[in-house]
Structures are given as structure tokens and as C-alpha cells.
Amino acid sequence: EAQVTQNPRYLITVTGKKLTVTCSQNMNHEYMSWYRQDPGLGLRQIYYSMNVEVTDKGDVPEGYKVSRKEKRNFPLILESPSPNQTSLYFCASSFRSGTTDTQYFGPGTRLTVL
Amino acid sequence: AQSVTQPDIHITVSEGASLELRCNYSYGATPYLFWYVQSPGQGLQLLLKYFSGDTLVQGIKGFEAEFKRSQSSFNLRKPSVHWSDAAEYFCAVGRFGNEKLTFGTGTRLTIIP
Image 1 (tube, rainbow over the protein chains, first blue to last red):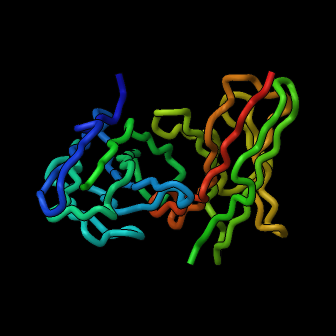
Image 2 (cartoon, each protein chain N blue to C red):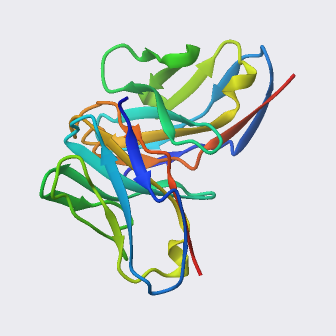
């Protein structure tokens, strides 16, 4: 089954404790992206990747890191999480960037930083 | 900078009634426009998209949207809603297509019997 998976789905952590949210897709997509969703703000793009080893900042990259060492995986790293990073995070992927190719979204990761 | 406005935070519609969700965008060139739906506790699913060609776009689940350049709008419509359409709907504009999407704040749709 074609899908985007995220782990963990729920995470409660404390300020400053490094964490990684994994994202994996099995559709051989080139393009992957991370978003955060906050009430009243919709979804905002954090980082995106057009292919292996090619990443770029979205609208709200501060406090986050990403890497794209393999085509299928695009982990999101919070090296020193803070409470303002409490949010619902979505990973998405599509075949190509710069097109209207459909983006497929993962189920989301709800992160709480205390 | 590109932006999207969804002026209606919450809309309530009776089952079987028609629906129109508003979306206005700001973008300097020809926009790539998308409508997504998010059911409770779920990720987002693409309903339809527009880049060029026919300004009336058909999507999944019986939805359609019309691009009106003069009004900078991309409103979503459905002639007859079903209870299963209750969800949150997001309009998005893309720079370079799907590469850098800017989402609106969403419209929550409630369906009453």
C-alpha cells in the first residue's frame, strides 16, 4: 500500500531534550516536505527536499533540522525543543517538485514540549 | 509574498444543501492552487488542483472549484453535501507548483441532518 508513515504518532517531551520524528514513504517520491499545523494558523512549511541531499527552508525553519540521505526517508530533528514547538507535524511527499503532482500526507505526529 | 485567505472559520450546512467555501489568494504570477480536506484525526487529502486551462476544475468526492483571476479567488463548491463531508478544508497556493505551499487557516464544515 502506498503510504507516508511517521513515527512516533504522539510524543511528550521536555524542553531541551533532542528528538527526531521520522518520515518514510514507499512511493519512490523525489519531493518531501515537513509542515506544522497550529490552531488558527493552518499549515506552515518547515523544510522541504527536492531530492537526496537537496533540502531548503520553508516558512518556519527556526529550531528545526532535516536531512535527506535516502530517497525514502526525511527525518525532522529538534535539537533543543522548546514549548513553542508544541504542534501537530505532518510529513508529505510527491513525485516531483515544481509541479501540480499530488502531495501525499502522513497521519501526523502530535508533539508536546513541556 | 504569497498568501491565502479563507474568510470563513466555520460553516454549518444542512445535509443535501449546496456548499461554497471561499478562498482568496495573493500571488504575483500565475498561481498553482489546491484544495485539501482533513478529516478529524487524519492527514490531508488533495481534493483538486489548478494551474492552467479550464478555470472550472473537477475534483474527487463531487467537489469542484472555479478559478477567477479577476477576483483572485478559488472557491470550492459542492451541489449537495453528505454527512461524510464534515471536515476541515484548506486552500493552498504554491510557488513553483507544489514545492512551497502556503495554506490558508482552514474552514471547518459542520453538516446538520
